[in-house]
Structures are given as C-alpha cells and as structure tokens.
Image 1 (spheres, helix red, strand yellow):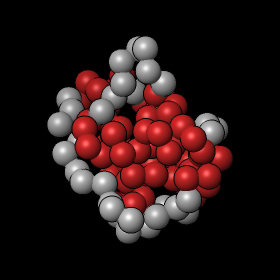
Image 2: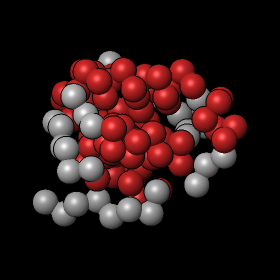
Image 3: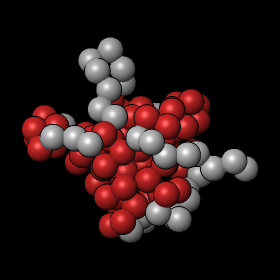
Image 4: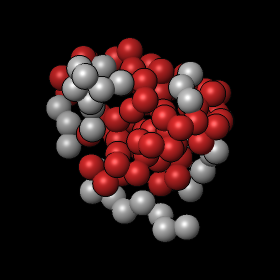
Length: 102
C-alpha cells in the first residue's frame, strides 16, 4: 500500500498517467488500477519513473480487462516498447498480483 504523501510527491507522474490513459481511451477503473500500481511500486531515484508509468498503465489496463498493446502504451507515455515489456511483470509481482500465463 502507499501513503498519501506518495500521492503528493508524485503528482507529476500521476498527471502523466492521466494524460496517457486519456490518449489510450482507458476507463476510470483502468486508470485507477494504473495509479495504484504506480504508487505501490514507486521506484527509487535510480530507476526511471517514466518506465514505471508505462508499465503501470499496461498492467492496469490488463487487470481492468482493457488490454492495450505494449507499443500503444509506450507511444502514449514516450518510452520504448521494450521498456514496457521488461517492466510490467515485475511490477505486477511486486504488487502481489500474478501476471497472465499466455
């Protein structure tokens, strides 16, 4: 879980989640899941928060049943598809969720 202070300290990144979710046409539920995932796994200063935003959006959309392609999420956030591919499973695991087994 996260603290209210995490929300305040990461306002910029949460605004990026909102903007990208809008561009992707995601529902409020998917955006909320992405926000929860981001705040539950906020990276330290040595890790990219933009990459975590992208992975959170991708995973949040999956959890909400609104899957988007890794490329679409990457484009909406401004990272590479490989960034999303390399981060979303570890993000789900860190949040205590099981990634799908396709």
